[in-house]
Image 1 (cartoon, one colour):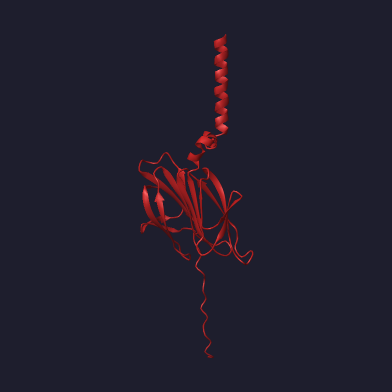
Image 2 (cartoon, helix red, strand yellow):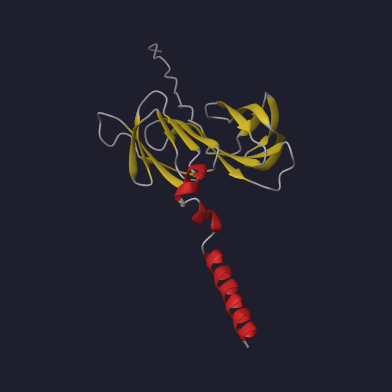
Length: 217
């Protein structure tokens, strides 16, 4: 009888733990244990805004002005808000970026903030993928300019969007070329076993009108 009771208790515990870990991922628990927290805090987020400064707010907490190098954030998804500093209130909009931080990685937001919704630059972050071949990584790339032509090390790859293209791990140079938009060029590092998620932002080229001179004819 006691054996049946013990077996029933063990089975009940197994079921309860299975249900618990189904709804509460183990990774989410482990990274909040003080002893193991440092392992999950080994992340860096670099935020730069060329030709200007911007206030950085991450998940509602302010981290000062750009350039900002923020370390030891716990792995997970974050909302980053950038508000360009300006003497004229309302001239620049606040921009929101959704980014994921992965342990042992550096994520990057490098954008020039222009008037209205205009941005020029890139957002980069890694996500783990255990299905990638050894010595390989992947890139996924989108652009605010529709149908941007993607060049890797000066060789044309394809038009955006690009999803899970597998490459050898290592350093590459990316260039986005789109009609009526400024070119965007930036370096990347493909990491083994990771997907590098890239979003490019391109300034539209201003339209100019030629005014013909009136010669009195």
